[in-house]
Image (cartoon, rainbow, N blue to C red; front, side, top):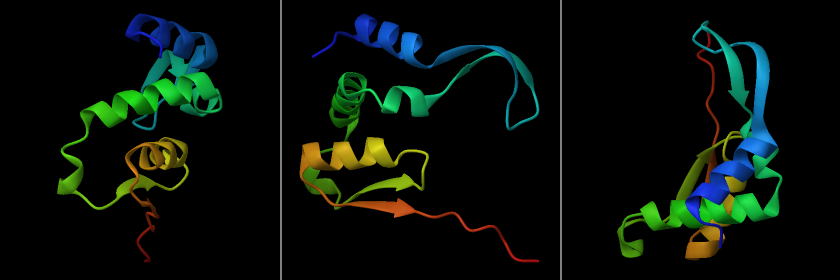
Length: 97
């Protein structure tokens, strides 16, 4: 298992991008952390989901792990396996006019 500092270094090496970016809120920034880049690295994904597992409430207090579509499916799926719970994918639908 990676310690926290080593994990942060690995996430930065895999997913920290520098350049000109615009956030969803419309603000400009010179860096971006692309979670899809670190989620594809087994060692990082394993360590991140170990951390998520440690943050969960008691296992008998919930039935499933949920994740928004695409955004956190890999994180939810592996966390669900680690805690032996089913997971669900939440699809956010845009309101119809």
